[in-house]
Length: 134
Image (cartoon, rainbow, N blue to C red; front, side):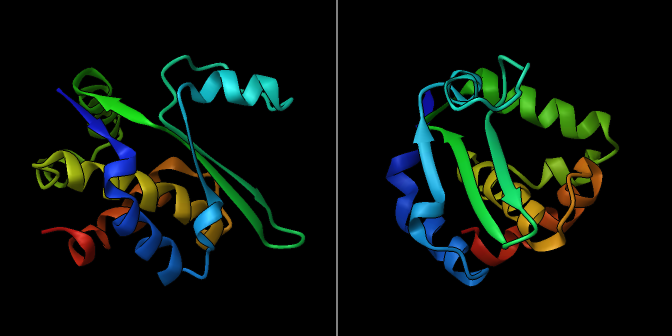
């Protein structure tokens, strides 16, 4: 199975709106690393699921996200968060939709917190997932 992100566009737009971001802030792409390379942005991970491009000078934000999240991608993302110490929090992401909500919130956190610190952004996102999850 795989999660087609566009099928959840309404939810994702609502999340963006809650943080003052326009719907076109989010761009769905087949390959995040390839998109970055095409746009002159450094990205080495072939497994990157999403990337927030923030300019703190003018508060601009653009989020690039995979258009399809495979089961392997979701499992890999959860493993990465667990390795950063979020074992019990990851257990709450018991549906693919909750994982997607966390993924977007993690990228929005870059904009809201003005931070690229992964742990800080994960913590912020986990604190808000339940607001959007069924």
